[in-house]
Image 1: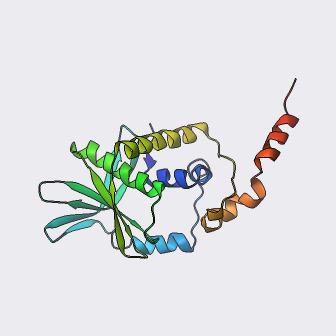
Image 2: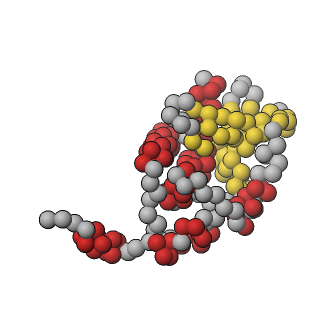
Image 3: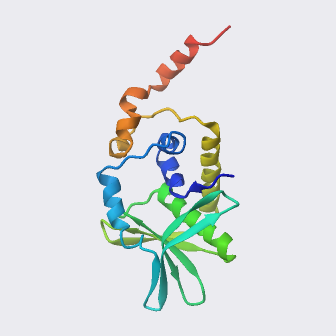
Length: 202
C-alpha cells in the first residue's frame, strides 16, 4: 500500500475533489491562506525538542502507519511524565471545530500508537489566529471516521479519477480554486441527471 500524507485526510473531508487534484493530478498551489498556515507552522516545523514545565516537546516528529498506509509529521508531540504522548496540530484559523482537523490529528495519534505500542487518548489543536488551544479526545467514533477516511483516500488514489466539482461557499478560499474552477465545472444535480440520460442506451 502506497503511503499517503496525513494532511490528505484533512483535504478529503474538506473537499474530495481537492484531494483528487492533489494525489491523482499532482497539483499544488499556494495562496494567502496556505502562506499564513506556513507561518503558523514556522517554529513547530523546526525538528528538535525542548522541555517546558516538565513536559518534553518534540517538534516536527516523523510518524507513519503501515496498517493505514499513512505518513507525515506531527507539529508537536508532548511527552508528559509517565510517558503519555499528546499530539498538537497548529492551524492558522481561529478556534473552530471541524471534523477534518480532528481526523488529521487522530491519524497522527494512530501512527504514534502503532510506532510506540502505547495508547494515545487525546490531542489538541492550537489555533494561531486566536491563540486558543482546543482539546480533542480520540473517541471510538473519531477513530472509526479516521480509519474510514484513510480507506476512502486510498480508494480515490486507486481509482485514478478526480471527483466532480461541487460549488460551495468555501471554494473561493481554496488554493486550487483557479485550477478547479467549480463555478464552471460543477453542475446542479438535476442537470447531471439530464446529461446522464442523454447517454443512456435502451
